[in-house]
Length: 326
Ligand SMILES: NC(=O)c1ccc[n+]([C@@H]2O[C@H](COP(=O)([O-])OP(=O)(O)OC[C@H]3O[C@@H](n4cnc5c(N)ncnc54)[C@H](O)[C@@H]3O)[C@@H](O)[C@H]2O)c1
Image 1 (cartoon, rainbow, N blue to C red):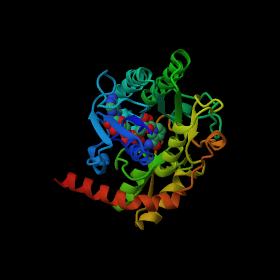
Image 2 (spheres, rainbow, N blue to C red; image 1 turned 135 degrees about the horizontal axis):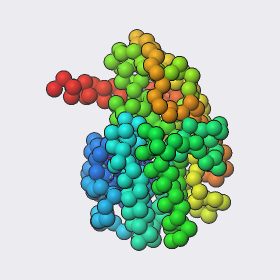
Image 3 (spheres, rainbow, N blue to C red; image 1 turned 45 degrees about the vertical axis):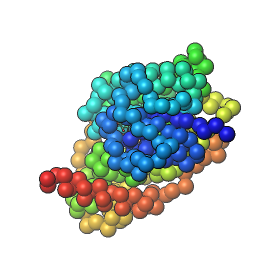
């Protein structure tokens, strides 16, 4: 049987690198394209000697070569994703969501490859509907500080649907909700790395507002399993339209802080600070569609996921500490 070949844009990032592992596990040959804006070679170091894997350092907003492979699948995961990263790289975020999505889709169209776009729960903004179903159109501030990310992703979804409608590209859109696990950047402003960083250094954990705002957290192995099932699906009812993949179990931010303190065995306390602008009060995926179409639901509970991630975060905190002292 012919070996299938996949391009993962953003393949040196947190999710992209786990996706490369997952695709290799499914027997694909994989090329990862990444400009290392927020990702790192460390995330794909373990694949360096795998002959089925290729890395191309490249800004995906520009046309060009994608390594030596003919492609069966293009998975477009390149984009700054954490609030700290997209605040710092606002223009780059808008560019990769627009020009980058066009380039990735053109690549898929030319190769006759399937295409998947990594979208986000941020498309729902500060949602007025709870939990969020895929049919909810969202409540996004188009000019606020988060709009560089939210609107880039909404545009990226629109381009993806247009390539499906006008060029018959076989597309999938995955709306990813908060995912955590090994290879996350330690100080990227996302809830779990932030809390881990503070707890492992014995600092007090910062909770914004009164901590009653809720989030749901999906462990990375569950997320990648859902993404791969969606990527591999065919002939699905409304399969080209977005599918939520995330963990629907909801925790308050305060609960989450307490769980991190318990997992790390830290003596840290919790401190409260003002809420940032446009911080969503509630976020929880309705995953009925993923259950129905893909037979998927997450398996790893927050306590277990935190334990599975602890060793990685310990190392990351120690390395960051060394960098800071140097
Ligand atoms: N992690 C989550 O919880 C989450 C939630 C929702 C959506 N997503 C989406 O999943 C994707 C991956 O997110 P992540 O958490 O792994 O973030 P990440 O920052 O770890 O990975 C993104 C990767 O894209 C690369 N990149 C950015 N701009 C690029 C460009 N112009 N050309 C080439 N490479 C570029 C970065 O260097 C990085 O390696 C993103 O599209 C993000 O929007 C992630």
